[in-house]
Length: 313
Length: 313
Image (cartoon, rainbow over all chains, first blue to last red; front, side):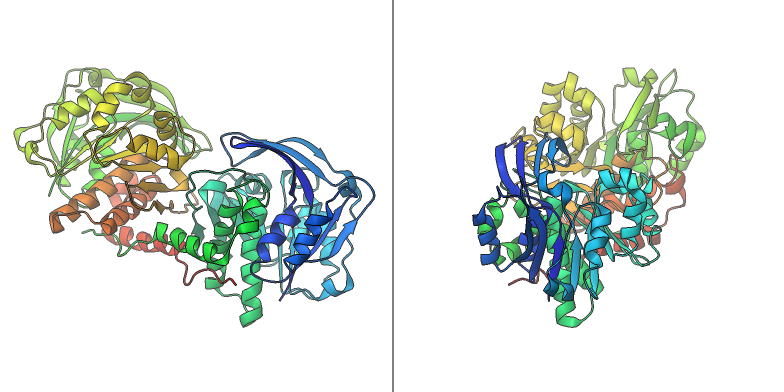
């Protein structure tokens, strides 16, 4: 079992209502890897500059993440500056220094080509296809994207969407891509962009997440009700890491992904994301244990349980 | 078993993305009564003008709603004009003609005094207490309110809150009342306003509803995923009607309200609200059957079911 993930490894300088952090480690591929590594083997592809701390790479290796696809380039690592107001669902970007990421030309090490599962984190859709073409016969392909690509590379993005099994978008992105405000219509509109059966996962931050699969009932997973959210950065990639990690694990165990696996994937992604937002950067993930994940998943499931139905008539 | 409800009976002139309707029947007590009447006996207290259609009163009577507390005054009935944009969660008020509602002095018929349950829909908190004082020994009291009273009658509102068992507010109102953005902190802040054990239900429109009870785990009920929402007016009062109707019914049957009853109340309120928004005014409620309610509740419950937990370690 294995997932190849391509995306960013970055520094984030952040301001949230809970505090400030300069040059924190971040990036979509980083968040995704650290989370999915709880469930399966992960191989990372990204690029960093010569300012990137060897200690972080060593930590990823120590956790068992394959970093042979972490490319090193001359220059500075991608740096994102952002701020969250009291509405933690949407970040305000204050600055994006692409640095070495501007010339990122992802080349997978030869042994990555046998991966069972691929996750294309949010990068240029042209590069997403370039990575996908380097994996021989993936059984499951997931992807993320963002407003930027919907706005400036729509055709390329739709071409990539047509090649994947599951697309993760947030609510705003799904409305922008589909042109529909109603979330059910938005999901159907996005599914219609692909000739394949496309699973659409719509992330709504503190309002939970919805799973749309062609011809199947909608699945809903509430967010875990947290009293204190410290830093929402990476929540979406961590969510995807928990989902894709769970699905890859199910594929390895049973050769197929059942409806129940999809539901467990939504549960797992939600629980993992609820931990990552409790502290800056990867702070909470460093101490997180499997027992804590299992316990919180039970609490989350209990939130929606109703014994018996409606008493009427 | 019986619920006394006080609130508005009104005309609504509405514009939604789905269409327009002039002088539709509406009002909080109207929506609440018509919904809770599916579950228990309802006695209505409100005021209407001499322009109010006798046919509507006859229809309420025919459904078994006690309208002996529906007061008639000289003048016009309360008229609300509003508009909903693509974000159906919040209405924009275009005009409020209080008319006979301006001098509403609620007097309950003598036989209303024995009600088991009381619901104080959104009216001046002074009047809410005036109604409550006319019921001898209610076992369960619920209330709603709105931004207006939080802003201009905060002390009176808090006095009323101190006398009830359950408070229904939407997300914006709960933030305004508590001064907290985080929804868990907002609920706790509101509970701290009362010396009694206060249940707080926070309604989030298409994002579902949360139930907060002192010392108990948070309960979450997603909204039913609808592809088409025609008119959100009355959704909150219908939700409250389904909740309070279910709780009153449980009280009658078993003398107590269990945690499971509260969860079924959240489920029932959510399902009833999902029907009322499918058409203007009471159009959908007129044709709604118990079988439809039971079937949709099952669909809603299925949205969040996860067999097994997280597969980790």
